[in-house]
Length: 130
Image (cartoon, rainbow, N blue to C red; front, top):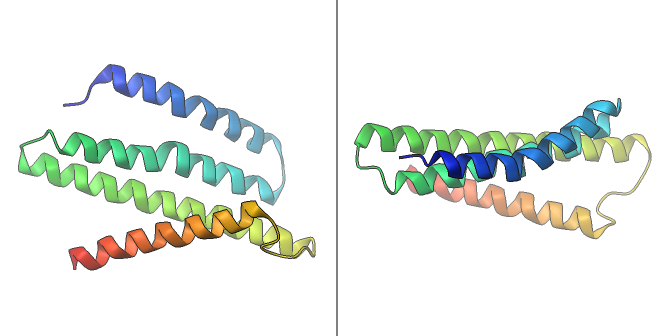
């Protein structure tokens, strides 16, 4: 089912940058550090895990295993959305605390679009499963 070499390579490729970002965030004692930390975990660990799990699900014939993999996919995607929400909220709160305007950079607009598309994707799946 799971190719251990694939997991090792993916873990290294995605885990190393995530660990680097998290170590830098842990060294910064400010609220804003939660923003890159949450985004790093979401984009480098949770979203790829969800995709990998669903790709593995295609090759599994056991019904219970397929259900478990689907639930793991849903959990990792929901955790990613939660982390993105917390990261976005801390960025918003930090801008408020510093008296800066919101949505003034390309980064913030792309983040808003990403959050919107991710939420619509999640809602679309929930509607389809209902």
